[in-house]
Amino acid sequence: MKRALISDIHSNHEALTAVLADIHQQGIERIYCLGDIVGYGPNPRECLQEMKSVAICILGNHDEAVFAGADPDGFGSSALRAVEWTREQLREEDHAFLRGLPRCYQEQRMLLVHGSPKEPTNEYVLPMDVQNPIKMSDLFDRFDHCCLQGHTHIPGVFSQSHFLRPKNIEQGYTFNDDKVMINVGSVGQPRDGDCRACYVVMDDQQLMFRRVEYDIETTVAKIRRIEELDDSFGERLREGC
Image (cartoon, rainbow, N blue to C red; front, side, top):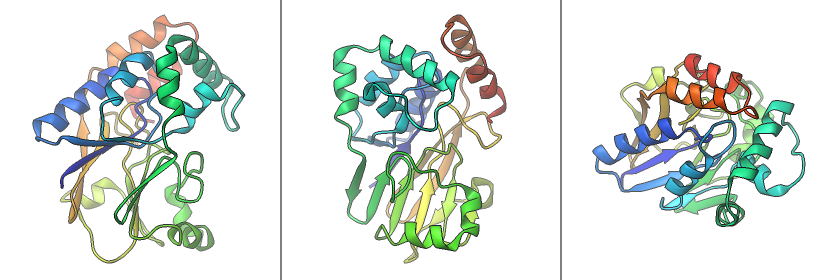
């Protein structure tokens, strides 16, 4: 079965709309979202509405911060202001939807999380972590075959000792018996130096990273008009960082 996996939309409706259009052009109907629908961006309600109809949606740390009601660890002051602003924009039905999201989801040999198989909502797994064999061994012991995640906004495929960036596997990554962790990248706020929205298409044999152009300047202008959202949230979209 062919699936699309998206993550870290961060209230960027222009990016999400472009990605959904690309997904539907390929005839893919089953979409999995790995969290952080909201945060940073100007259109939380619109993005939440789109995600209410996908097959599976996982809780992200920004999603959790919106309904948790307390200052989450690891959030800077500008991110916290964005959380507070987002909280005020949402209706009770939106808050209920976020509260009901699972922290992880298992489908056959595939585990879906936002952060990591150890801490599904909050732990970062970065490319440099392949140099930490103790951490990687601990993570890989916690899933059966394939773990898909977001959170860092940096797409790629992890083995226990290597990290493959999308440019290293432009023709796609073919699954074998080896365990892998796959970061699907970010739809709404890429941080790998490529400003285009990123997501993954996969079936049981192979996965492909896809990049989609969208109207960045419209999103930047929306952010600038909202006093509670730091201008840097829009400006970084131009550089993908």
